[in-house]
Image (cartoon, rainbow, N blue to C red; front, side):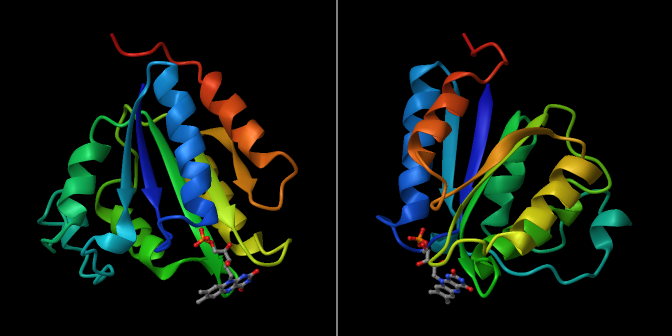
Length: 176
Ligand SMILES: Cc1cc2nc3c(=O)[nH]c(=O)nc-3n(C[C@H](O)[C@H](O)[C@H](O)COP(=O)(O)O)c2cc1C
């Protein structure tokens, strides 16, 4: 299965990076193709709400920046993993910019290949996940209808083991 991970933490050795690394290692061991994008090191601007993508642009965003690389990946991605620290009760601004830019590529419908989603979150305090969970469940599971592969946080007991277990039991057949 082809998996796209967007990591919205600027800290290369932070909690989010640790969860992403555990997921990637186990998923790759099970034959999946995992591509990780560290969006904090990319040039990804916020959505301009110009609506060109839903009109003349026919699904193509009017802006040209590093989001183009992610758009290209999204076309045949089968699973999306959104990973971020919590900043002021929501996901980091860097990941939010990337998600807002999904407007041209995922809304009103996701590419047919995209079937599953998971979210990894990290925060200083526990119970800081209401905003991020609302977006994950409302936008990605509800609106887009993706299969829920779970929401994992650094405050969950044995979170690394749980992430590895999920990565080891992804049901799509591995790519040849
Ligand atoms: C700008 C900023 C805002 C933050 N806001 C919150 C917050 O609202 N609630 C919280 O529990 N932690 C907050 N934190 C702490 C981070 O969420 C926490 O340190 C997290 O584990 C960092 O993840 P990382 O190691 O993957 O970068 C904030 C940190 C920063 C830098």
